[in-house]
Length: 202
Image: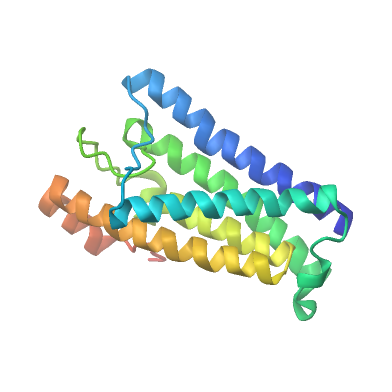
């Protein structure tokens, strides 16, 4: 099982990045005529969040590759009380479901999908599909993928990445909510009252 996870995790996150970020970005850019990556540069708080999130992604990628290059590299950081095959299988299942969930949500956003907040172009407010159950299904899926990663590879570093990544996403969510409220006003406010930030079960 350990050997499978060693290969599965870097392949998973590489596929996640290629499909969910690179692939959809290229496809959407050709459709709308602009780069959907609109994260700002500079020293604003918003730019800082985006920059830290890129750092987390870089650390995540390096950390998942290390066991391939140096077998047993993560063993010293393992949380032994969680190192069970049942948790690992469950974590892998969560990761796969999260990947599918994110891709579906991105496709349902169509031309409205962005990496960051688009101040130059008004995007359509999507409230159908997975957005009936979550105002932020993409961030929900990304959070679940990090949780699944921790369960499949329960180390202190994986836990750190899951916690910091989730905090940064929660900050980004609130920044986007302010933007959507300005763009869509009462329509977004009604939607916000009806659907939960991460998940609505009823």
